[in-house]
Amino acid sequence: MANFDLFLLPFSLISPKSEVNVQSLQLEEPDSEIKALKQLAKNANNNTKTESEQQLENLLSNLLKFGVLIASAVVLFGGIIYLVHYGNQPARYQFFKGEPSQFLSLEGVTKAVLAGSDRAIIQLGLLLLIAIPIIRVVISLLAFLRMRNWSFVIITLLVLTSLIYSLIGGYC
Image 1 (tube, rainbow, N blue to C red):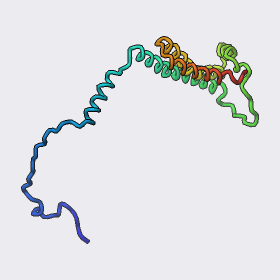
Image 2: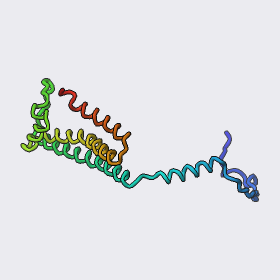
Image 3: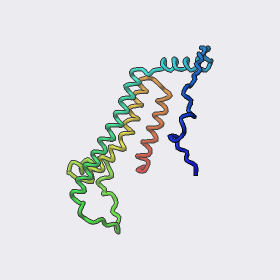
Image 4: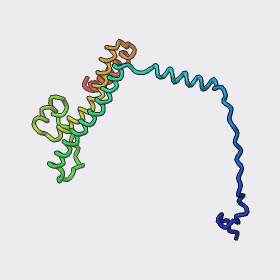
């Protein structure tokens, strides 16, 4: 069997002198595509956001970020309290118990939270999680009204209408 190890090759195969040909490149005129890309980049820099648009974007992103964190913390807190009270009891899957009637309204959840109910704290966190996108849409609607951007006002009203209908549609 042949051995193809590079270190065993005789040094006579490697030429001691290597020649490098250096050719100078001639500068050419930029293509029309490069000019078009430069023009596009220049136009993109001119289309920067206004200060009010940037503030709205920051407000909405912070609302989502901190709102989800707060809602998650409330659910986690309620879950920990629930597990402290009922964590050692076995689960009974033979019988289905629906949601208590006190958790079917915002007023009932609020009263139960003030009474110290652990399930109500979890329910409150979930309600906060549902409310965050609705608040975001309402803030967007107010901002678009202030900017007098009527096409976005109409779109945001349609989104808000569908959100409200999905929430109260089951009760009508």
